[in-house]
Amino acid sequence: QVQLVESGGGLVQAGGSLRLSCAASGSIVRVNTMGWYRQAPGKQRELVATISSGAITNYADSVKGRFTISRDNARNTVYLQMNRLEPEDTAVYYCNADIKTIFSVPSLYWGQGTQVTVSS
Image 1: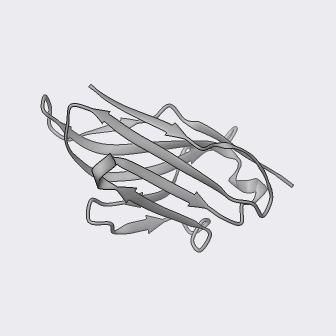
Image 2: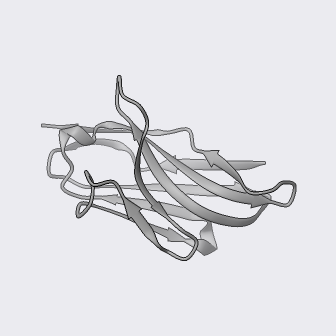
């Protein structure tokens, strides 16, 4: 089995920064694309950023220039550095990863979510 464990959420004032981490563990053969999504109250889950195994990145327009996604392949970990946070960034942030295990073809796995709250 695979687990994705997120950390780094919390409460921050507008203009501040937070860094989220998400580590994948289990019977992993290969981790392909990893990403971050978020879901605000009453809204659908939306893409924040993704990063391929070759470090090609993609960002939602709303976070371009403020957020940076990166990964450590040796640790099967993805990071999201969030700067100049705005109250509109308040949401539960979820990581996901496309992972091949020794038991299965590549499948999408999700973390449990971490709360980010930005006060004005």
